[in-house]
Length: 129
Image (cartoon, rainbow, N blue to C red):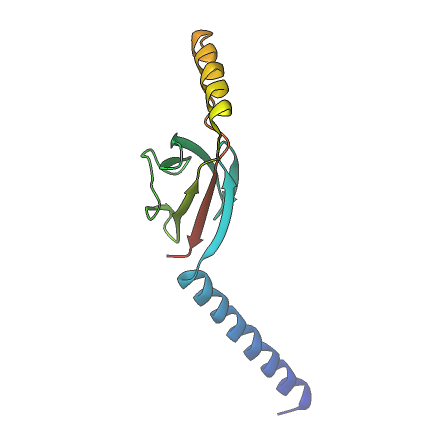
């Protein structure tokens, strides 16, 4: 075996081991991403929107699932990708802000505009299976 072929074989072996390690890590540990409620992100080639159902308790992943998800729930994006809701952090609101937002929400509902549930953060983890 010539020196060039030996170097090429070693490089191919290192690349193959790195690929196997990457797939293993993505499959078991997953990749964590934090998304603001009301925002969207790209996960596994699919655009996923995050909408609050109950502040701090459940969310909907728009474009992926029709049901409300709580921390620990998983949903399959496509055959090789699963998204898990790790945690939902509701925004901390003091009493004066809660009263003000309640007044704004009631004014918005009176005007026919939908109330906005944005403000919290959702930690999502995706993995290959």
